[in-house]
Length: 339
Image (cartoon, helix red, strand yellow):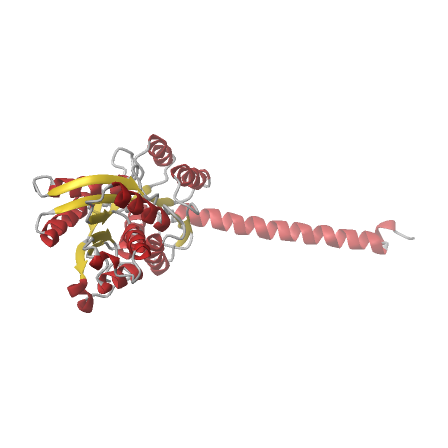
């Protein structure tokens, strides 16, 4: 007797059903194994730990050094690190990216601290959801952030002020170019700088303008100040690109590119990007306060992993800063804070 379920197309359908069930069961078992693995070792240093580093500006050379340090530490500890950031420095965009990381339930967030109520609110939300946040480079102590890793920015600004006093014999007409009026780290640098020079009768602060953490913006700010204040003879740039922008403005105003020497204009800056070191070597930039961005990234990841591993960690980890002049260059290896 002919049995209809033995027809070829019925047999094919049955085989496909069996294959589907088999695949589904396999995926289910894998998922079950994954979930049980996560629950049994929730805080171990392994590839299941997924961290995100949210920068102030994605391709800023300074933040790329922080990324390199963070990525190195993550790889050594078998953790996954994602690096993201605004294409151009933007408080609102940085906060949006943090919100996305919180929504994705990432294991830990490292980001620049912001002096902003919305920033504090999203950090507090992350903490309430069990997502630790560590601030890098700039702190946000009024938020519930877990820890801060970076320079003591007040002390670094104070160091810059003392260097300026030494190199100008206490007589200077100063224009300050700051990356942002709202970035907490830059505000602290300016505060430290002003405290260092405030008792020097021969030092006058003529003006302060914002560069928007942009080389062109720095050149523009410096140019405007130099036009508005004929007596200006010294610049202080608070962020990594400011000294380069100021030097570019001086070069553009002079036919032989040695503008700062011809006009006796001194430039004090921050960080040790290769071009900044070259400008120091050329005598165009007088000195620069050098931070440890690579160390910031590496220590930030290490602290995060320690916390996720159940260890107690410090709430503030200050990395080193020092001043570099032309005479220091032969003994100095730049590009990552002298590491």
